[in-house]
Image 1 (tube, helix red, strand yellow):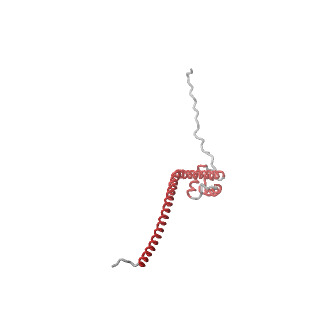
Image 2 (tube, helix red, strand yellow):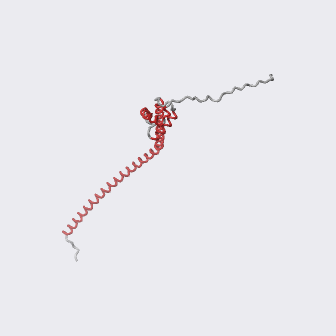
Image 3 (cartoon, rainbow, N blue to C red):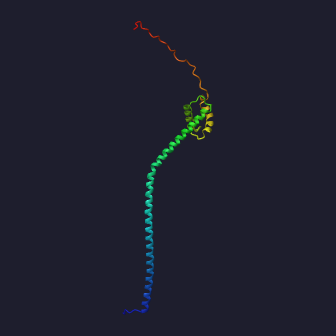
Length: 175
């Protein structure tokens, strides 16, 4: 057995190995480029994550600062609504009293009647347009509480028990 090789076979074998070597080198270069590109993307994503984490933490601080203000805002909205409703109700009562059609109604009585009618859903005692609501409420009040449409009567009963004047006793012994 001879170990001599055919130079043409060796040359073709070397050429094949060099071609394979080039393919492997190209693949390695592409892989290295991909690794470098992936590393750059990873670095960019890490930087972006750090920025987003900082932004998130800033938002958490803002939310913590705004939470009591939001609670206070809710309380103030309720207060403003209550005050506005009270004002509208006072204006409606005033309009009803000034209409002259309810001479026997005082403010407290009208307020009670309006509460009952509001609960029944026939009158909105908090209506912003109090004049229109008063015009709508007058016939309903006249039907529901007819005594309010009558003028108040004067007392006419007994003036009370007669007053007795007692004479003062005079002492016989004078100082």
